[in-house]
Length: 317
Image (cartoon, rainbow, N blue to C red; front, side, top):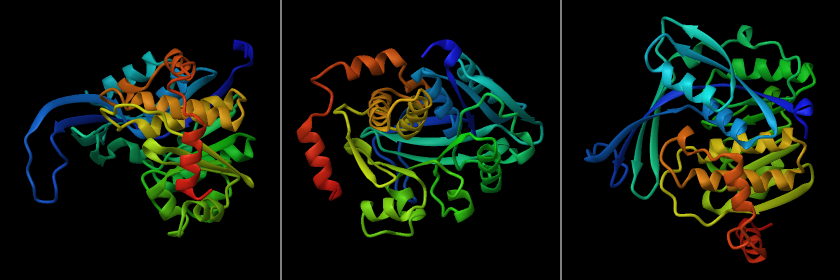
């Protein structure tokens, strides 16, 4: 697409500063483990997805976020601007910038505790004008009434609405009715779909035109109206999976905003997500468009027919 015809994605959601400790394993309740590395990284589901959308190319990316008036806000804002995201920032002097405390195991598993801080101040009145916006991408690290209000205003304005239902919680029918795309992982699908017996039942049970469930290293499964699509994962050596889901969401919506067919969007998002697992940090791990294209151009690394068959068998599809 030409730059004049580029679609615009607005991401409305959370932004945190991540405090990451590396350790041999994630501690069990009551256990203390010694770490062997510490870093801070800009993160938060909303901000991660905005960076992923911007780096994927194909669409102009904007973000609505809330930050405190503290030093934690500075690296978050700098990371988003460096990625080319146009920002609408709500400043709250009474609350700190959101933070996340992450224990990252050597196996790439992690445990995350989030202190939302200023993220909780985002309200219906903060949503900017939607003129020229084509897609709205939301998550659940901001208040649910705010998420619902944003989705309602977007639908009334004729936008497409995508929701990453994370962290997991039951969703009201009023919100589901406003969505075009719902993205969940297996645990989130279990909650949203009311504990279905299997993935296919869960996808069918959620009243949204397109429901996508990410399956970690196995790839993803999507129901688009009555059609089921499978996308196996790429074989990689994971280092840090923290931003994998967020990278998938941002890259997927960027591809859809660029008018790519759903099958192609799932492929690109799965590739971007895989690459994000090969580096440390959240936004620092999200790949640029050229890296994703290089991976997709390598026939030795793109999942083959056998991988598709294996995923279909695992999902009973």
